[in-house]
Image 1: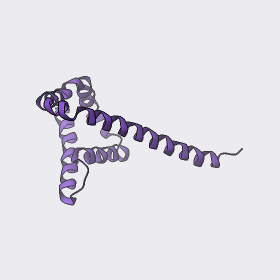
Image 2 (image 1 turned 45 degrees about the vertical axis):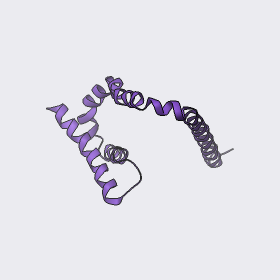
Image 3 (image 1 turned 135 degrees about the vertical axis):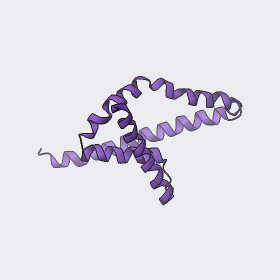
Length: 120
């Protein structure tokens, strides 16, 4: 019964995220917004963690199963990798480098701001 309640809680937050995205025509995926709502709920009500922890650990232990649909998708569209494979690899590498660079710049700026508050 505990696992069913935990699944109901998690799916409710996903549904909430999907509903808000559909209602407001947002550009982010509903499950991502649902995860943000769930995080806020955990911060506001830490006791919620106890209700979902067992299910979360079980899902995490079997995380490899969630990659099966992605693997099937890769096989299904394998011909696209032949046509656009080089462009995809270049795009992934370029976006990774840009993301790391922007993250480093933001981190550097935050370190400057936090060090200004420290006595020298």
